[in-house]
Length: 141
Image (cartoon, rainbow, N blue to C red; front, top):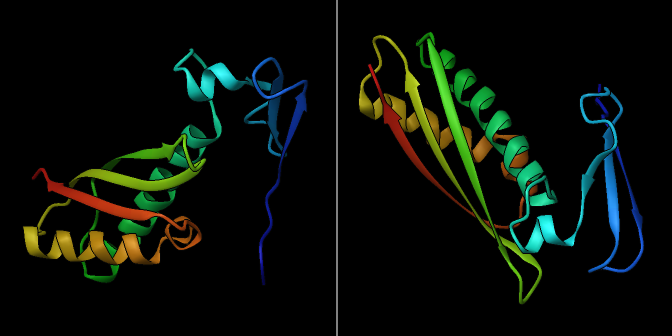
């Protein structure tokens, strides 16, 4: 059985003077504003790359928990940051760097890193992205 989720985006105007809004079917995002300044000039607010980072960090954390469970380790906590790099010249997402920290009682660094790398490979969002994905995994027991 496949699962589907959806989001909508509306855009009005030109690239630099326009503005848009993003909503999700769940209502978690409801008419959240985005525009050129938020994406390319660092103005306060969200942008597509930030949303990709949120999706990747959350997906990776869940996949990491699964890989640790498969290795016999119960996770106390996993905290992941996904830094998404956009090349403004090519308008391409070129890289994502995942930094994850975990508290996993009984796990050693080798088991932790193996599970992290397996999660990086098997996370559905990792599979979706056509970008270099790097990883830093820190065990904090």
